[in-house]
Image (cartoon, rainbow, N blue to C red; front, side, top):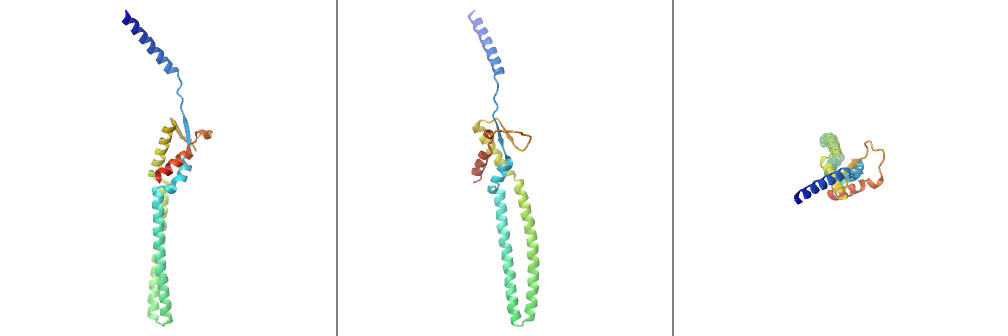
Amino acid sequence: MNFTKIFACAIFLTAGLALQAQSTPVVTRIAVVDLQTVFNSTSQHSPSMQRLEELRVRLEEDIRSRQEAIQLLIEQRTEANLEGNTREVNNLNRQITQRENELQQFHQNAQRQLDSARAAVQVDDEHRNIIHRAIINIANRAGYSLVIANGGNILYWSPQVDITADVINLVNSMLN
């Protein structure tokens, strides 16, 4: 008889807890992040931006070196001209023209390389993954169950739920 009473109480208690669980509202904590601001604020530290800067410096140094070589030929031509060495002047003119054409071609190719590298910065998956990991980290630490990117159809959000600055700080620390 005791067993029956205990079993009945257990069933009643279980049913009561189940009803209470169904009626207890789940509070969803929501945060908003401005992804464009995060991307713009942290992209200077991204791997693709660093590669772009290294490429730019290397190309500028190469262009400067080529310009200095042309300047040296021009100085040699001036000396040959002062000495009256027409043959050497003509030879140097050909070399100068060839090097100037090569420089112009190199400059155009360098510009295409830089444009391509700049485009890669805009679609840098590695940087986006770092931002995503930072958002997940902050959401987990702060107890957010939903993070929404503004710029969509969000009509209002309180600055209290905007985690953009936190994401920027964390991404910058992850990139450094």
